[in-house]
Image 1 (tube, rainbow, N blue to C red):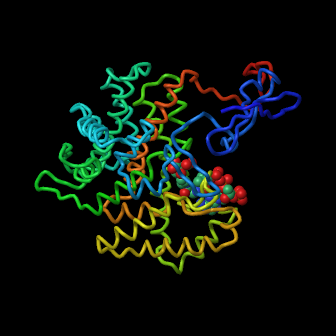
Image 2: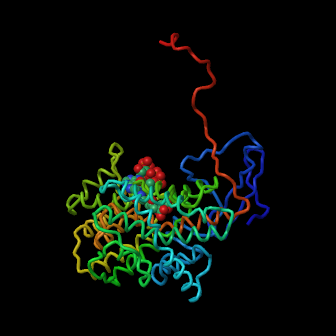
Image 3: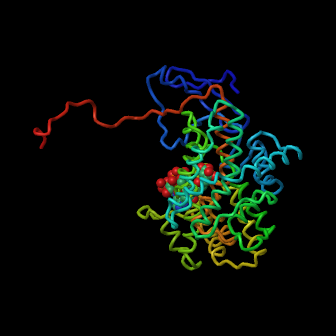
Length: 426
Ligand code: SDX
């Protein structure tokens, strides 16, 4: 990983480390000790916070690999359970390994009966992400037998519990919001089919899983599974670096994902498309997005890493067509999205700033066509990203060199000064 190459900072030489592919890094761990100076990188635009073998992104080429396999291959040929196994274990499973993994996950999908009472503490109109933050954090109170993070077996059980229970918890959040009863998981269904039934089924009748919808949603889960050191993954890693239990760390990741600049963008993007309403109004919104005095941004556009088309958005756009055709749903919002993309990608502002549609631009159209309310979109993102968060957390905790994350700062507050008694103040 490191050869003799070095990088000079002042009169000090620092090792250049090279990964398998991607940019080299300057190992500046000794910089402060050597120079008494910090680096300064708010937003971490030039900072590699860790070493990882999980996911590789080339933002200029629009490449996304999970353990070396392209997102195009995985979304077309794999399943969310197989991709989850790959992220957790590093290799594609044999048939036995996959069947065994699915058997294990399936039998962790139920939640403790007491967990249901947590939902009653929320108002019925609570945002599902508020419920997810609370309930997932609350799992820490139920699984004391899998919170010793130094024990690989306990880490494995906690990881399986989190992956397995997220669909149940998310479906319960939806049911609670519409006043319908919770459904127990059905072990005869696939991971994604089970989630569809728990979400849209009712105790009064059988629920038939639509195979086209099941496949499309499973593909959407694959597209959201992991994405290098994004904001919510970095949050999970930082929380985990203190030794916090995995349930609390994932709850922290859910909280970060909720932001409209991150996972909340899928909900914001569909709301924006509905607000635009008609292709004739697109120029007005593109003008607003370009106006420095207007805080409006095209939601679902732009990315910190991708300065080319987000490969996930391409797969998502293809999937929209499949689902709308299969469900025989004509969706004027999709027409607005296609024309908005066309106009933006031919506009100098977006070309110059390399702003392309990201994973959140089209996902809401599919999720809405399937029947999810916009408030559930980010909860689905959290459901799918849980395997990525868990895999990144495991990778960090099992690194023998792992230490608590504790950034420093450029201090610009007042220098030391004497206290002024109240009677002497102006
Ligand atoms: C996700 O990191 C990940 O991997 C995240 C994610 C994952 O899988 O985990 O990929 C998921 O979060 C996708 C991104 C979803 N967010 C949105 O769609 C919200 C809209 N996009 C942005 O707010 C923005 O593009 C970010 C937050 C995504 C990226 O912001 P950066 O990298 O900090 O870039 P920036 O804000 O500095 O923007 C660069 C320029 C700015 O103009 P100038 O100040 O240079 O004049 O581009 C402009 C911005 O004003 N710009 C936009 C824009 N996004 C950036 N202008 C209009 N519309 C937009 N959407």
